Length: 437
Image (spheres, rainbow, N blue to C red):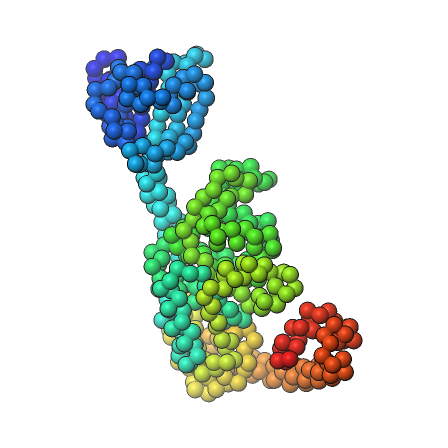
């Protein structure tokens, strides 16, 4: 090997961010780069020396003896944690030396954060700030104030509210108001995926974990949310198996991929949401009580739209502006009479239903303002709803009176009352709770 080629090889080695050191079959150092000398605290001019003179009981001796690869070993050298790969150098079936490459764990963590940032910039991010969530009724302003105070901590938040009330908007707002705002925001609807698929989505999987698994495996959403927030919507729909895995994440702050052996630390804030009564699910043995208490550290309850009808004008303006921007038309004014009409409805679908109604009005309107003429379909819907509500209230009152009469007859014996009513005790407990008994 002439002097020029030796210089080139050394320059290539020194350009590597990894530490590299190689020995021949007699354990004599034949190559070493600057990063290896820095990480291991070795002096210049040691090529040609025995490695044992500088690193007694070097692991390279074992590689020369066994010929086996050792990948991902972790060691502490000069108060630095490093990850080491050791491989034999084999030519024509003969071991002629060994090579070791290593990197400081802090460097690996920096690379990992850059990768996670790329995922974040590719769409794993929140859009809505708390101040952008429309609504200025006193009870809604209190909810936003509470959400802002929750954002200053790193504790788990449980958001309660009916479907369509905007639970994810509050989760995004909490994230963007927190110290994790520059990190990823990952949202997953736990009701949208079957159990086995939800597990692989949340925790990831290794190559070959199941038929159709991606080559090289796939990181889970907890890994992608590292340094940020994961929003678990419809948490009440999780299977007991996934609940147990989630509880482990909350307790240990680490995940294990499906079919994987590696434990992966994660720094993630969990915000969960549900429209179900979790205490009722616990009574029915459909939700783990230990998970409930770990999730229910900070609770945010979003009021349904029917309890804040005064917010309809602000919501309507915000939604119409958003729809007009999406469909590429000029902003539209709203006649006061339309606000009054919208406020007569009880909105079982909450803000989501209001958005659907307004979108239909905007798309069908031929003018530059929305009024009663654009709401004929909604007026029919309103009248039908009023008739249904009256019938429902009558049926509910009859059921209430029947349950109370049976309870009086059995002198409060719930087991006997459930038998006479032809329902199980859990259902009776739920109905009695609803009528405050």
